[in-house]
Length: 509
Ligand SMILES: *[C@@H]1O[C@H](CO)[C@@H](O)[C@H](O)[C@H]1NC(C)=O
Ligand SMILES: *[C@@H]1O[C@H](CO)[C@@H](O)[C@H](O)[C@H]1NC(C)=O
Ligand SMILES: *[C@@H]1O[C@H](CO)[C@@H](O)[C@H](O)[C@H]1NC(C)=O
Image (cartoon, rainbow, N blue to C red; front, side, top):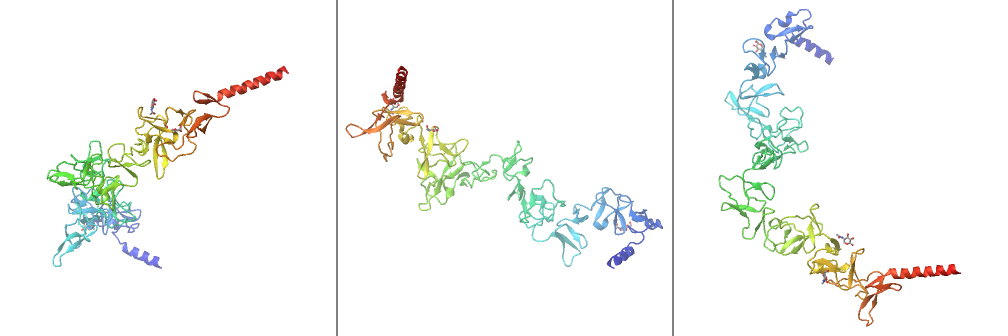
């Protein structure tokens, strides 16, 4: 029933001289008015060539060639006009919208009631006037191209194209979106539905658009963020005399001139600096010192601080004393905070240095504090200390591993035996062992400055001396002394001789 009504209406609407009219009996019904540019094709009225049907004429599509005087016309219903030999918008006040195929007036253009304003704007008429002005809907300003498009952070719809393309704010969520081009850096985040910068860029509050950060590849200065330029090697770099500050942004260098008109940029706020007397200085001029390596001003150890950011990174602002003190992973050493075993360090500079007293060095591949060469890490309570093996270089006795009977030989500056005259280094054990008649321990001591336990060399035992006042090493039963060591060889030869003799005796029998 509905279908029948529809067909009836359709047949009524297609009258002679209209596109689609039946011309199978009489082809002249199409072209009785030549200005329509219709012709009869396979029994139906159709537009000539590439023309398109518009209400009651065939018209030239937008952008295609036209002639001012003769031939088919441009689509005036959609506000197209023949200009410079092709169908175009009337003038600069107009902009073509491919979605609606209409020319619409730009923001700020004078409009008449029936004239369309471009997307997201409308013709605002004064009550008494015939004409009005195209104005953006809502409260946002137009962009440079006089379009009413959403700016950074504005609520947007992934299906529309209303993010400001001029600021590289645009929705890429809609593949059919004609404003999405390869230069776009702003995307409509489909989760937040806000216009956001794409992954390559960051919103630049000064430029008010998405710009590339330092070190990003670039072709042109306008791609790079404020205070940076596209350098000759094709990367965004600090402009002019600006340098990288504590936070890695471009700033005026410490102690350089600032605050004068010809100087761009500012002092490094992140690096605790301000512009005072036309010079970049530390915020707390009297207490802070400038660290060349970190490019930042800091309150030194023991001086007054207000927050952790005032102190060197290795220090914390003690909440009780309000002074900069070593944090929990640090060792207080020479008024500096030194880093403990296994923690991140830096090879250069004053900050982030490994503890010297703990025999640590900054590992060049690990970038963590490691034991010095020939030193081994030994767990002590809450931290690890590194102690020297035999022949490790040393400066103080406690550098060397006492538990291996080692101490620092202060003349050679190498870890050697604790009792050089009564001990010998045993390679396989990595420790010094007492020789015959040398001192040895029967029980472990709790000394901090002497070995806890001094043991004897191979094949020896520790016994009380004749006087009973001390202990010394002696060869075990069956081992013979040779140059203060106990030789197993002698007893083996004795055993072999015994076997030989018994063998001979057996043969004789
Ligand atoms: C169709 O053509 C006639 C005659 O040239 C013209 O007056 C009229 O405005 C045209 N209509 C459209 C929609 O272009
Ligand atoms: C230091 O080493 C030298 C050379 O090996 C040695 O003669 C000397 O006895 C050692 N001194 C001490 C105190 O260990
Ligand atoms: C220290 O000595 C021990 C025992 O001889 C050995 O196993 C270890 O590899 C040595 N470490 C270093 C770093 O020399």
